[in-house]
Image (tube, rainbow, N blue to C red):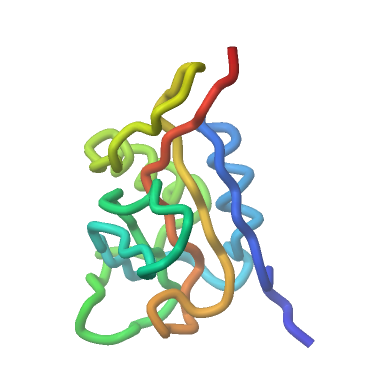
Length: 135
């Protein structure tokens, strides 16, 4: 039995939905104490959806996960997570905007499934993502 979210993928925009998604992503497993700013997102060859390729990604960890992470000076609560991710998104690199007959806006994608990059103490990964709006 798992006490964490086994799979979560949320595409959205805005601070209040960011707070909700971060809370769902596994914050109950422990406060964020380590981060890894991994850019760009690598999309597996042959995948049909290449729209995320080149976007920035921030990975939030509850425990040390090796040499690729940075220890924060203090563990972050949910409010701290929201502030950190919101500020990070302001300067994040986005993949090329999708070609659509509607409009697009800057948003984010949060994943909370299994290990990210092979590390289990992952709380979630946040990617800069385009939101596509119909006509």
